[in-house]
Length: 367
Image (cartoon, rainbow, N blue to C red; front, side, top):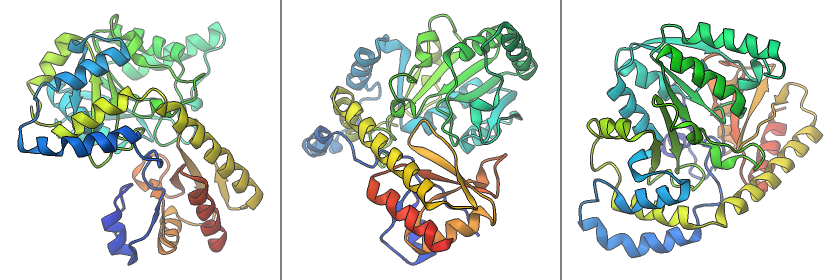
């Protein structure tokens, strides 16, 4: 039986014989894009008869202003996924390190260029499973760990907030990793696709380290937080030399005219981010509270900092739960494809309260 990727509604319709789902399988902002995006897309429709700007100059300039970087440090792409494959093709690493569980496209991209893949096991706690850097002894342990991991390594894919655990790498921890990677001559690809979902006190970006780390590449997704998965829009940040090199390996038409217009409008809305974070916080608080009240003996809901969470299943396989919820019209993500947590976890997106209530009811119907 094929595994469903998150958000594949057409395949879900074929499998479960339904066409009306609550989709908690994809980690997308459920409240839609900024309202101005709809108007801008409608007005931009006549532009589809023209080729897009291969340099995406207007969107790049907007991003430059928003993130306080030079336009030469920015590359726009057809989603974070396209940029991930482009940079891996350009760098052609021979030995790659991937923390697991993790986004499956990291390994696909690495193997597509024939790289040897090594794994760093994090487990269900994600970054919280590593030693905490609180004392000098802790720091020494952390340094030793990463020196061993990055020895003879060409590239490492990091992501924070971490998918699928929702954990966060601390800024002082990344500083240590960057220093060791620099000495090891290792590229760091830092994927912060879920950055915008974080609360203010946890939200920091690896972009602040670009100037002093010429082998740092930061990936940012506009697909998830701005609710644009059907349009596809991602951004890559690095130094100008790296950006120019990557342009030689990409399709110059990867960002269509509608995607560029949507991106320009999305980043211009200064009110939208806080509104979304407040709504999602209400939904998450509601979900955790109702889950606890339900007293599921065979299920454990793990804490998350973002818009998705892992549920551990203790009495049956994740596939069985996915199938039974699917028949009830509720889609969740089977984590069988995430190495290290196979067979006993599902990932659920945090969406509106009504959707989270339906999930609780669905689980109660099974248990």
